[in-house]
Length: 243
Image 1 (tube, rainbow, N blue to C red):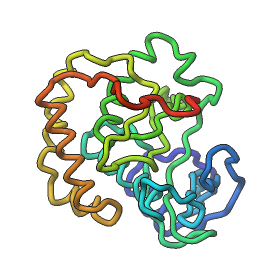
Image 2 (cartoon, one colour):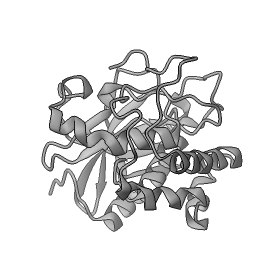
Image 3 (cartoon, one colour):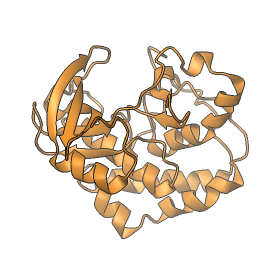
Image 4 (tube, rainbow, N blue to C red):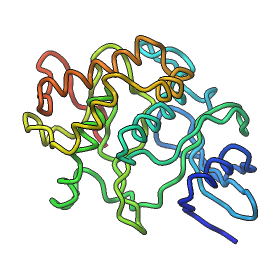
């Protein structure tokens, strides 16, 4: 039996942790090694995206061998916010090329991206914009926003360049700059001002204490100002390439 997108979290956790991984291909775009894999567990198959630590290119402004862990941290923050933006993601110690992140693959149309979104779909991006401010995403390209084919659910991917202590936000989504934050997001933002012990425990294998504190400070600042921030005037605020 082939099941592309089982939605049961318990099954996903079991499959991603213990299932057999088989390499199916490599994503050639991007600077880090990224692979499509099939996970087989209990006679079911799930497609996933595997990013091994040893495939990361060194960066001057992020510690080495931390990008895959930041992918997992982004998922943990998305879950704490109850926004469901990031596909199910874990850090797997064993893989074809060693330890790395493993994320559920989303079936989507790669030709439908930020720069040609329908107006109604672009209006749905407020939580993504806010999530990028919170996580200090240094690389929100237009192709990192997906709409699942079967459900039309919105997802955001590629969070390896997040959670830096220094201001690094580079994103294509500045559509809501200066707007008041939607009231329905505020209670969940407050969760990050004083992260629960469970969230801190989930983040500590992947972020240092300064980065976790900076996440809390960004949440506090957003709540205090009450608006989507404006683009910075003293540095580049868009990623390159934008798509």
